[in-house]
Length: 431
Ligand SMILES: Cc1cc2nc3c(=O)[nH]c(=O)nc-3n(C[C@H](O)[C@H](O)[C@H](O)COP(=O)(O)OP(=O)(O)OC[C@H]3O[C@@H](n4cnc5c(N)ncnc54)[C@H](O)[C@@H]3O)c2cc1C
Image (tube, rainbow, N blue to C red; front, side, top):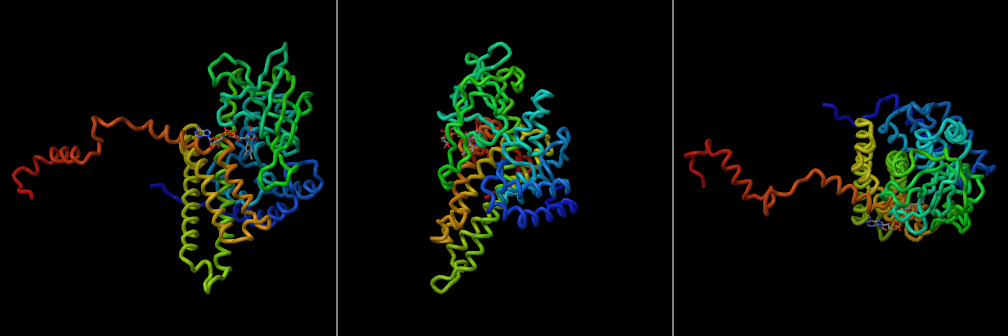
């Protein structure tokens, strides 16, 4: 019976190297480089590309790519073990060539781009010579794509896009945008939108402002509020079939969600280490924090949450490898996606609490992690939607009870058991 939690020795050796490299090379860069996607920043350019070369030489560059894109096709379990190390550091994903949203956008381009678009955008994107933007959410609502109104109208050999998008990450740094727009307003809701590649230099793309997250300084945000005004793109810049934007979007989401989860495992383990270090360092009222039962409960709860989350993430990765299809593992991916927010939220809250006043400051990372936990619960679909998806998929396997009493009603079961053993028990006295 195959039921094995060990890592093959060759991969374990690579992971050991990655662990050391991320701790010693990537983590310090997080403290110096403000935006690892900014290819125009000389400090970033001095520090990150040399590390990328080392990763390439080691054969660990862009390992999420399948063989059709020149990647090693390692499979999700190996990627999970790798990503949980990368999750310790903000810049590690870009150092290893697997950063969002470029990883997902490259999968879309690989599936649906024309040879010319692939040459122009896919090759440099895979090499991190450019970065990209995925522009779908609109200011009036993100969880419900049926409310999106950005419109694309055909004009000869061009499509003309008008509308506003919100939280288009890296809009100001991107060389191209992947934009979802309504092309067929009268079609059924999920066949109204099409997906387009929009080159960044196209006239009419206006980044109204860059929205920052709660812990960021005003003006240092990277979530673009973008207005598209009469933006003209050639007809061959449509990705996938007309009306097929939702199918195209799914190309990026399955992999994206599970990779975020893998990285969250790494991040949350790092926070757990901070929590435990504090517990054995801080002395109050005659005892270490770690000697107090309420604190011990925080530690035990955190560990159980992290390990349960990690196991579900790894099992989901394993199922994707077995079935070779994200769709077949949709329930598991939704479960992992929904758990991500809670585990990061709960562990970083406890770590903040145990660090006392220091924990609330910008001298420790917990406030950022708390905000990030909400980001994890929003980006790629809110937690609630994933729980609904999970519940619906689970309920598909259930049928109503045969009558007003449940099928496991004890009287019903006992009656059936009596009938089953009637012959054997005939004549035996019973109390
Ligand atoms: C840091 C960050 C980066 C992002 N990057 C991108 C990007 O690059 N490109 C892009 O297009 N988008 C991006 N997004 C946007 C993200 O996809 C949306 O935030 C998300 O889809 C939710 O949309 P919304 O923010 O409009 O919230 P709303 O749709 O207004 O939802 C608000 C809340 O309502 C509740 N809710 C929603 N639906 C349901 C439901 N069915 N049942 C019960 N409750 C529900 C949830 O609590 C939800 O959080 C990013 C978001 C963040 C925070």
